[in-house]
Image (cartoon, rainbow, N blue to C red; front, side, top):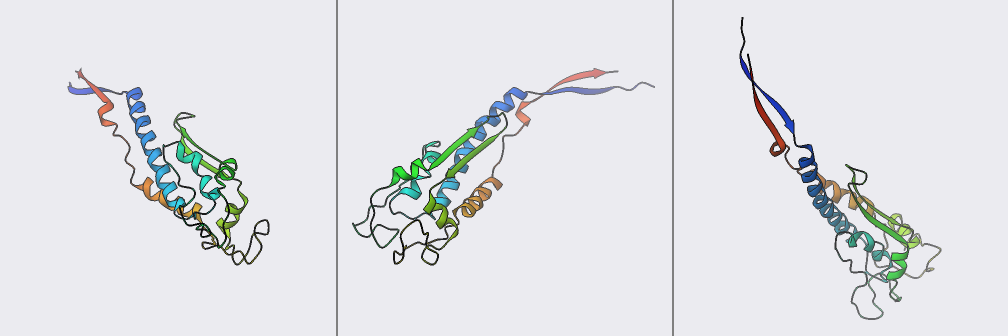
Length: 182
C-alpha cells in the first residue's frame, strides 16, 4: 500500500517575532506606566510638591510630566490649612523610578520607590486622626488626610489596562515549505 500526502516544513522567524514583540512591549509598558501614574497621582494632593515629585523620575522615563505644586493663592496651598514652600526637590531626592525594557531579555517592568516619610505615613493613615509625630503636631489639619491607598489604586489601573493588552500575532512570522511525500 502506498500513501501520498503533502506535508509542510514549518518554521518560525523567531528573530522577527521577538523584534515585533519588543517594539510592542515598549509601547505597552509606556502606556501601562501612564495608566498607573494617572491613577496614583489622582490620590496625591497638591501642596508643597514633595509627595507628587516622588513620581517624577518614573514619569520622565515615558516623557510624562508631573505637576507637583498647584497654582493657588498664598495661604491656601491645597494640602493643609497652612502654607509651606516648594519642596519638590525633597520628593525627588527621596525616590526612584525606572523602566526596564527587555533586560534581562523577556522582562519588561517598571519600578517606583520612595522613602519620603510623610507620603509613606499618609499612604496608610488618616493623618488628621493619627498624626505623623515626625511632622506637624495637631492642630495642623490636612485637607486630604489619607489614607491615600495609591498603591492599591495604581494596581487596579494597571490590571485593568493589562487585561486589554493584545500582543502581536505570531502568524505573519510562520513560514511553511511544501514537502512531497510518497
